[in-house]
Length: 337
Ligand code: NAD
Ligand code: UFG
Image 1 (spheres, rainbow, N blue to C red):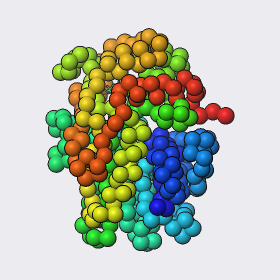
Image 2: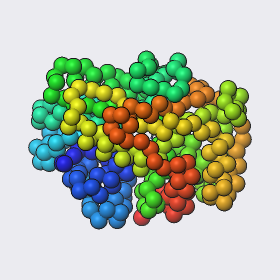
Image 3: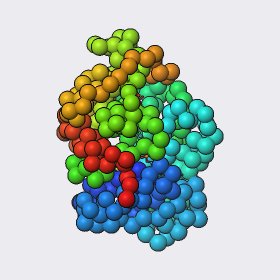
Image 4: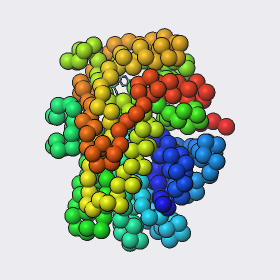
């Protein structure tokens, strides 16, 4: 299949491109490199023996997207491109709404104009808001607590409306839980621009000595050890979920939301202990007050993905932490020459 991958040089996109190329799909990436490095492309080539086609462009740029659709004639789109930092989205909400929502609408308009109506969209477990009790399933009410989450929810709702208006569309909104890990080669992984917001990149940068100490945001939650519980999922399992979703589009009409998680919860302290063991480095940490907006426990009901996509996560937490550490220890500064 010929596929357009927006945000394909980013963390999840690059791992998905590797799996797609390995299966013989034809891939063109569009990314403006706002949160990724062009070096990813040569790493993908090293892993797969194939260099993906790449266009440096912004998804808000309608002319650039029209050119891409005319030139490459993709049959389906996997839409990863977006800004994703929750805290930053509170500070610059308009940038988030413009980049994520306007950019997505431009992309969907250009898709429609070129009669490309197969789409897999990167949504998030954040759309379950703070009022549902885990395990979270797709029938639960959605809501958002910050501008980033609202962009995901708005895009999902736009896509439900779009599919209702025109039955030619086949759309899957994949709701990711907490992607971690890296490709087993250690050649691609997560490389945040600034100080990481998320737990795993923070822990691994402490272990490699780039950061002094982890702050554990609260140990007074109603969880077994008092720290926050999340559903961590290996990024390669997540990538494989996209392949299954693309295959499923052929037999699906309309728009469906599907969780990609493992169904298991792991606490912050379990991650810290596991990572210390695997890296052979004790990760220093300090308990600090809760982070605003965090909830105690988030994990998926992963049954729908199994039923509809025939997909389930295969990689365990040890593999997730080992692969994170292999990436971080062989690329201590991330993507550099
Ligand atoms: P990432 O930042 O590594 O990748 C996103 C990519 O999109 C980057 O390469 C960035 O340069 C590109 N991009 C951003 N805005 C763009 C624009 N206007 N035009 C072109 N390219 C643009 O993030 P990721 O972790 O790979 O996440 C991919 C998607 O999954 C995002 O939409 C994110 O919101 C969503 N998601 C991520 C997580 C997570 O924890 N990583 C969880 C749930 C959902
Ligand atoms: N945490 C710390 N210290 C840190 C960072 C995180 O203790 O420095 C804790 C958090 O309090 C939380 C857990 O580690 O209990 C995970 O936090 P992350 O920031 O890694 O992930 P979140 O679950 O808060 O959010 C992530 C993405 C969101 C996405 C959501 C989906 O950042 O974009 O998963 O569930 F929406």
